[in-house]
Every structure is written in structure tokens, then in C-alpha cells.
Image (cartoon, rainbow, N blue to C red; front, side, top):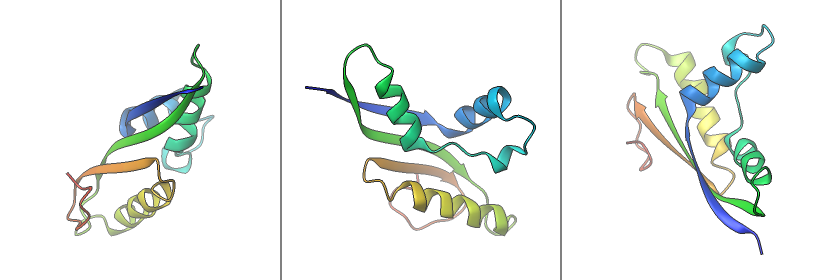
Length: 102
């Protein structure tokens, strides 16, 4: 029986490190990692059979008063990721009413 694991991601570090290693010259915000897929990859590469049961993503959020376009993109990404019931996004920064904003 597979072991359930939780994966915790500091999104900015994951994103920038991944981009520097695999970005292939594209703009950093055109190649954004999918937290659930990354968690599944980590689980698959463990020595023991494992399943990524929980994925916690810690990420900043632009100030919507000063950066409305990046804020909208950030909100859309978080919404898309949270469609996977395993993913929880915890964000700091700009105003948001979600209970998951820290």
C-alpha cells in the first residue's frame, strides 16, 4: 500500500530555480510549474511507493492596487491549482478575502 506524503512548496524558490535550470530562454512568467504535477513527480521518485496526498503552496500575491494584471494572473493560477482537492495555496501580500490568505 502506498505511503501518503505531504509536499510543501515555497513557490518563488521552486519557480525561479526551475526556470534557471529548464527555462530554455523563455520569460520567467511564461513557464510556471504546476504544484500538483511536481508533487506527483516527487512521490513517484521516492524509494517507497508513495502518493502525494497533500500539496501546500506558499506564495506571495502582488498588490492589486499597484499591479492589477499580475494580481489577476496570480489569482487565476491559485484558483486553477486549487481545483485539485489536494492543493492548498497560502498567500501573503495584497488584500484578499480567502481564508487561505495568511
